[in-house]
Length: 204
Image (cartoon, rainbow, N blue to C red; front, side, top):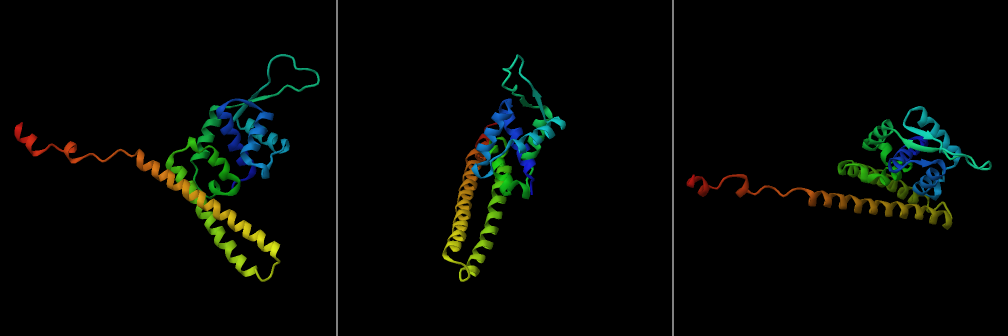
């Protein structure tokens, strides 16, 4: 399972691919990507940035000029060539970490930078993981219906419906990817163009 710091690193590298950013802008963009349920604090972001600086994945620069006394200079972060290579490596990794809750959303946000085969494998892995979770939760719901009150039962039912919706969403995405692959594939070469016809050969 991917650790939270690794997920943040992937997101930072992906965002800095677009343009250099200062810490405030990075945090704002990261929170939009992570969603309201996983709000990122400066206490989580800056240690990750320091770690990435030590690894030479990013660089930092302070704007030139004199800032007002009451305002700190905003340090601007930029991805390095090593950071670009690391981002590419992380985005091509396919395994359980790619479809876990903490990592899948970030991977999905940068799907346009990955090959279709990788996208399909990640989507299918995520769907399989959720289907396994769904079977487990449904069986638990059946066992506990007689033991919990209606509010606890409704909460469990809400969880089941949420997973079912995501499974349907993933299935639609997978089908769309496969349809795109089919339409983009070149048509098979016809026999008339692949081989010389007998009549043409007889005229030579």
